[in-house]
Amino acid sequence: MGEIAAWKAIADLGMGMVSLVALVVISLRLLASVSDTHKEVRLIRLELHRAIGYMQAYFSRQGVHFRKEDDEAWTEKRS
Image 1 (cartoon, rainbow, N blue to C red):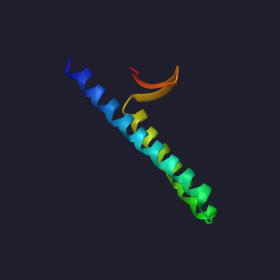
Image 2: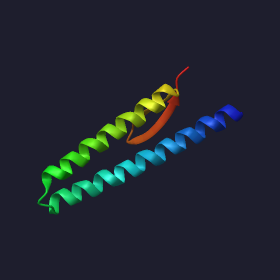
Image 3: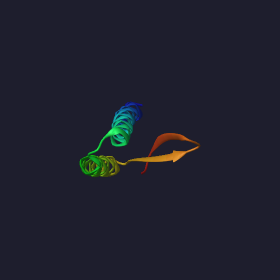
C-alpha cells in the first residue's frame, strides 16, 4: 500500500509540473502575440521544450510514463 501512495505522490508532482509548464507556454504565446521580439520568445520556447524533455526523461527513468487518453492526462507505472 505504501508503494502505491509513493507512486501517486510522484504522479501528482509530475502533473503539477506539467500544469506549471502549460501555464508558462500559454503565457509565452500571449507574449509572442503582443511582442515585437519574436526571436527572443522563440528562444525561450526552445529552452522550455528542452526542459520538458528533461522532465519526461526523468519520470521515464523512474518508471512513470505520461499519456493522454480521452482528453485526460494520467500516468501508469510500467513494470
